[in-house]
Image (cartoon, rainbow, N blue to C red):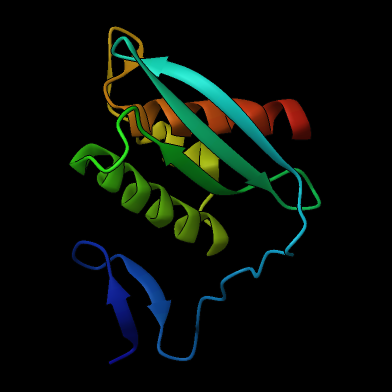
Length: 124
């Protein structure tokens, strides 16, 4: 078998001899903390950048400590961060955000869009 992983039929992601490498971020790195609103509620996002100004992590905190929503936001932002550190561009993640009336439908989507805008400001 020459293709180890596929998305959909016949769309190769990795060949057997290829491997993805996760970018290890330095302990000290540039980050921005932002308050934002979605659906009339306040959220907090932490966006971490590599030395080139590319978004490599996203952390989201929800409005109610200890809630299931907060736990889901923490888990989802961890998954986004891992994807970014394996090379997924924030612009690609932002393009996948579900929108309604030109607005993200979720707090996670809003944070991803915010992170993409911050990267555009930093990188140009």
